[in-house]
Amino acid sequence: YTLTVPGIMVLGTNMAAVASGEAASTGKGTDFGSLYVGVSLTNTLSITNTGDAALTISGWTASGAGASKFAISGVPSEVAASSAIPFQVTFTPSSTGTFDAALVVANNATNYTVNLHGSASLRPVIGVSEGSLTFTGLVNIAVADQTIIVTNAGEGTLNYAIASDRFWLSVTNASGSLSAGSSQLHAVAVKTRGLAPSFYVGHLTIADPSAA
Image (cartoon, rainbow, N blue to C red; front, side, top):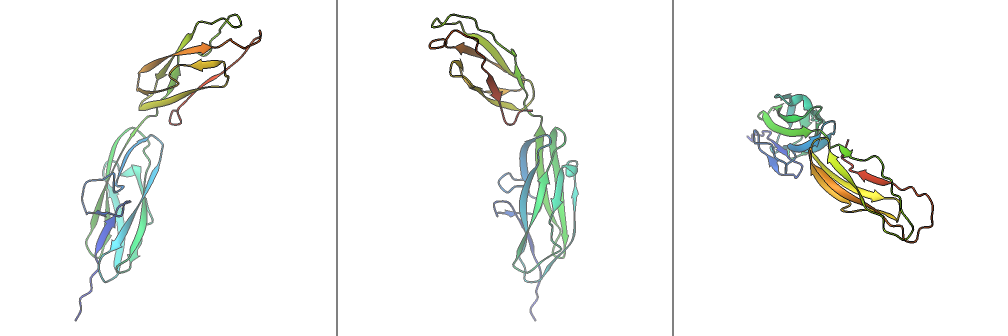
């Protein structure tokens, strides 16, 4: 007679095999890297039946200190022979730290463990030394530069850019990258040449899409 048995293998986001019990891997999507608190990342893995009989999945459990940060969805109850079905793992950290969990898939071949890992930090925060600057001068005569200090008042890395909404208003080094607690000095310049005597208002916008 012919013996038919199911087999199980989990494939990562890159379609490479995730061996049962192996360490979490960024390339395979089981290591979610570092996210900001409150941000979610969903990776799609697949359960493959490497055998020639139906693979029956009786359930799954997630355990470990970081298990509550990982949500599992779409795990099938059965996978036909030589077939694969995707499922999703979503990492949503609600606090800072490093989180590990073990996803165990119970089935009629052999129980399979997928190790999960992720970490989280707080967002960077933009701090500026001056809320406004006032320049007073004469038309066509150079006006002395003034300075602002940009600080990362949060955590992580602040990658910011400074944009002006007026052609006569500019800033030196219009971008920067700051680690937590560090600062950068920027010179702000006003060009009066070509301006008529009047009162002018301009704005500098300091932005980082990842900042709080």
